[in-house]
Length: 343
Image 1 (cartoon, rainbow, N blue to C red):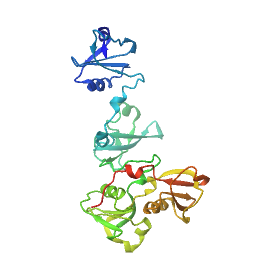
Image 2: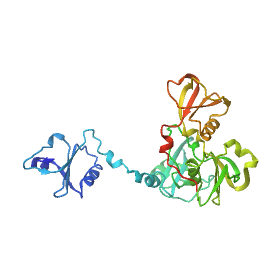
Image 3: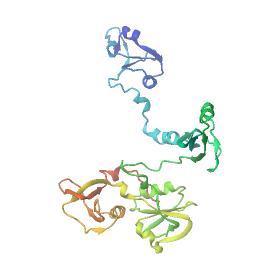
Image 4: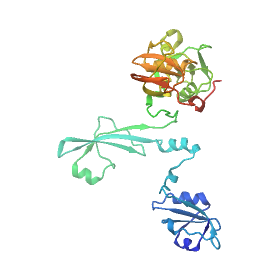
């Protein structure tokens, strides 16, 4: 667009290197911005607060890149992340290494029966104070407040550290129980060529979980991991891991289940008009695991501990039932999931 000289006089300018740099820098400004103008001839960048101040001059105007923000949403650009930045940004910003969680209680001398519980997040590590020790409030609270109230502060510290992001939640109702869920301690799965295989060079529990969850070779349901790096993945169901013939005793190891019920989308208060399998007594978690292990199961129906397998879900093939729910894999879920092949 060729912008008039009058427009440049009303523009509030800054210096930038290129067009996107112009937009990115201005997105940090809190003032309302309607129009951004970037002039390549001298790398001049500026903005207008009123759209009416933008004038075009096709004869003597200068060519510019013009950005209009009628929805007043320029600041959102500063909050956007490219896909390759998401993982590292979470690692750096959500739980920064060497943070500490401080929990304490205030007691006022003038009101001995009143307690205030306060939680602090700090960007530094202080020396651990034993739970039964009472200290004067440190610099977390102003000196005048301490002297005025005589507050005392039993201080506890719990350090935490984010190691990695092991998976994403596809179902917004999924809880933390979806991730590594231990079912047996002091044991590991026994090697079997048809059921359980061991994987070399697996350094963390998270990696072992990911390999099981994303396996293409077989339907992995359970896995074991040892502190010395032994990872074993298996098509064995959770119930099978309690059979001593399938496990070995080892105090450095634990056995886990994928808890695959969270991979399914729940359709509440629906049931299939025609049942395609015999219903059996199972919990919803066990029903999901059995469906996951079967190549012919595309969905499952669960009605008050009665589990049965289903096919493709459609509204016409189902009907209302207050006691039932149908669970199905999200559309294209298998194709869109990142997979790891077992070597």
